[in-house]
Image (cartoon, rainbow, N blue to C red):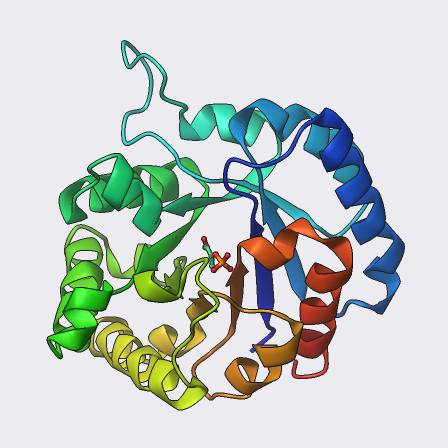
Length: 251
Ligand code: PEP
């Protein structure tokens, strides 16, 4: 399966910083053979759409509303994201689950709405440190995945991207071993295949959590790790491109 590397800029950037970062990424694109995307803050979608025009880099957002249109102050709809050329939206990132109170049900609603509107949701799942220490990783991740699968038709499930992001690994410099991550990816794969059969083998499952150029190969060598969702390292063109080059070598 072709690897997918997606940058999650989170709440970072400015017009000047984004321009420099994207110029740096553009310069190295000729060496990239994997799929590449950046999920940028809403206010910069228009800028990034223009700066990425004519490149293979796919634009995405970091969240999307579960509603189609109307009186939802502060929310951004799938249709609005499509207007700016978005193809992806991250849904259910742990920082939204933690700081914005997003439940499994809210995440499932958002995923359903995104798919119905023609956007690919990157559905984030992952256990907290406490969950991990209690030995509940598979239970928690399994439940988060189930909540999403329950509301979708089989054909929609085939259009998902999943990101396994252990919460304790995000922005901490700590990571599971590639083998530990693979175990969780394999469980997710089993859930997908259990529900939609062979089509589940084609759903990309990304690993996220302190992935950087020096550890990317270990993760991307694993059977069920089909790419990466990259936070901190996506803010430096050289690091982001270096991860993309590791992925490109494993396509
Ligand atoms: C993320 O927030 O999705 C993420 C993976 O962050 P980092 O790479 O900084 O751990």
